[in-house]
Length: 624
Ligand code: WT7
Image (tube, rainbow, N blue to C red; front, top):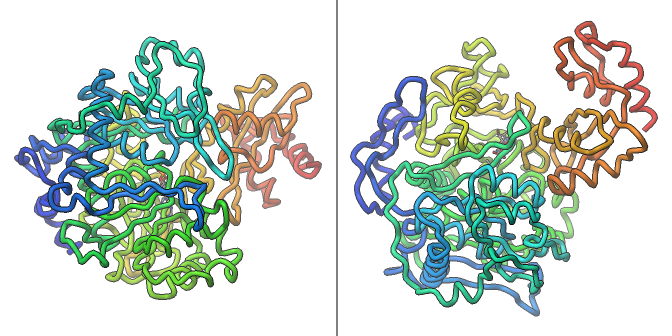
């Protein structure tokens, strides 16, 4: 199938596209790109609506099937706190929110900022935007207001949807109230809609509107806007190698179809496309936050578009107890469980007490995403959660790719703990040396993809040049992932990690430049350098080297980073140093800082403008 799909890309995607109920059929599957581009045009002249594809189309024949089960952090076995929506109920709710957004001026192309915790309303709002052609710009609710505001303004959002706050780890956190006065007064923001989630009264301005009474008074039907295949569906900001986050643009047809097709084939899901007996219905549990791409593709869009039942958990997966997520698997008879290596490393540190209590009988397929999984954790997941019967799909992809590039196919391909397996259908991966020649099996190189696919990002919002420069020009005619990898003799791919200045902490992505820019804002900081070192639980931990003045303390830096970027970005250690090692052209030599920290041999100091610094750096590290 893979060979056929690569050699006949268009006919493969033509067959996949039958999963979508088109409003107007497309004329061509793929139109070749013009010079300098790679992507091309997918499903030209086709019209569809993502909210219709995901939810409305199931209402007529499967309206009573359960679409969404939401579980609060406060829920317990003896005192349940859940909300359950059938496909019909979800469709009605989406229509009401869409009508309200429409009344607030949202129409085709309007960007809508979404800053909501893990409650049903976040999915409902994303799909309500899609229903009337609005472009959703969702920001992780764990990010600070400064971060969210910067992204919303960059995206040109006109309407913001947020909540009074949310719950995580038994504590309440605030959202609406933390938005700055300057942001609220910005003329480009016209309305701020607040969902009352934790019954906290907020100060209001004339732009503020409460969600509840407005949404419930809206008509329960709303026509779905026919969208062109290539119309934007959402923008999602992610970190790159410069300090400025990039707004990754995904389109309606190509993205949606790619998310559906990858989920269907990799996990082996039938959903409502070929309905099963009720007891064979697929129940999907994904621990990712909707604020990340995993939450977009495999929570908001594909699981509904295929017609599964989605379990959404409000809180941290290890709260109120480390086995919280296991309890949900048994309670809701979850069949497909998707999570990240960080969580598994945390859970596997105490096997006996956690997994023995659960049967996990319902589970069929397990999956991981976000960073390489070490073979020990993989085996633990396989044996203790999958009870040695469930394949694990180690899915490799990126915000930019929309869906999986590499992954085993559950029940079909061989599993190798630590490898992401081979390419998805129609994906043609290559490992290149720096000079553009192809690496031999076993040889490390840079991972590229030689053919476009429907889910590839279309642009960086308002910076198309940066898109071509960073992804398409490095190896002309190929998409460059930025990751280092090697292919083994069977053609299976092993991801080593980022080849650029990107750090992954617990699966979250930060650019060193972004971390440094944040630290450098602090008044008593002259400059700083961020480096990553291995961490048993988080994969990588951030270490900051800071040139400071006055009596600045490491907690000042940590607090500032928490406030500006959120708690995942807090460095494990902060070293105050007299200066940073630099080349003659002023580039910070981060590699040398790593060497010093890890007490590794220092390779070369002759390119440094300040070689005498090395001894002082050693001393600073020792003193700490
Ligand atoms: C980067 C993309 C896409 C979902 C979540 C992260 C790393 C992702 C794997 C995996 C090894 C992985 C890569 C990639 N990555 N999945 N299965 N094995 N590494 O999305 O924040 O856009 O990060 O995550 O380094 O480039 P993202």
